[in-house]
Image 1 (tube, one colour):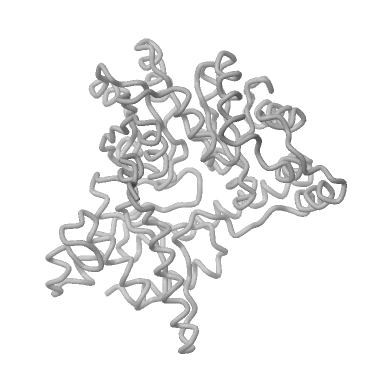
Image 2: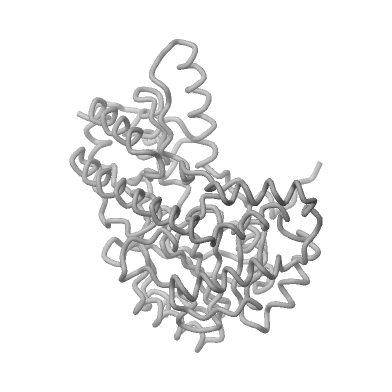
Length: 413
């Protein structure tokens, strides 16, 4: 059977592939009575939906509120999100501009299909979340990755955007806070980038799914405060602890609402009705208080874990200001651990020969096999020295993080 060229262009999602390997090793370990696998590879909160959310879901099922909603989502949920923007971020976002989607993934797919034509180019930072690149590709457009630096917080600079802008450039796709770095773009840089993009007739898309987990007042602002032409993608997965519920939203200019709605009608019909009714309870005072307690716990985990990595020679060039990741330079650790290993020097262990991320890839395999610790190698996130980096998720509870550090200390010389 012939496979489309579009499908052939899609690379594996190595985060998930590494997760499968970790699960296989964990099963072997369980049979031999070894130490259980610690998973710091997945960007998933260890918290689940709080009680009021679960109760609202059960009530919706009990009351038969399980049929289709309109494609843009429940009006009541759009209103509550609008109110959340006003009270949490001081930004007025009318409910009519909010489209509820089947996760942030659906939001990004809708945005790309509505805005991009075949051959268009979208500027993105390197490193960046790999799925975002694939959504651009799914619209037959091309993601143009631009290498970023720690000095710019692994975010694009206005100068880089201006230098890379070409005749086929349609816009920029940023993430703030970012996966994998946990760093946000400075508001002044974002303002300058958007002004330039808009002057060129382009579009600024900002992935804000980790915005609720911001820890620094300098960066904890929605891009929507800048301009009604900004397109924002958000989700109930991270801050609201609803990963498997597959519910997100998209904020678009008024002129795009009907276009997005029409496309959503054909592609998705509507988001999960039960998840939408459950999400209404996210904005109850009791739930919001719980989310803020959890945000404080994520910050405490970061504040403890990152210095521990530094102590072990896994340097984190930029302290993450949000999300729950640490983007650690593992170059020195790899040199120490594999000093006399010819397979490391060839750069071809555990993967195809010449893999640009063999350093972090091999380290991740070594950690799984010898320390029963799953982390994510850099290759998923781009090509800008990603072979030197591993991503640690700090979404796990403190005892798990403490055990992970102990295992790292035992393995790294």
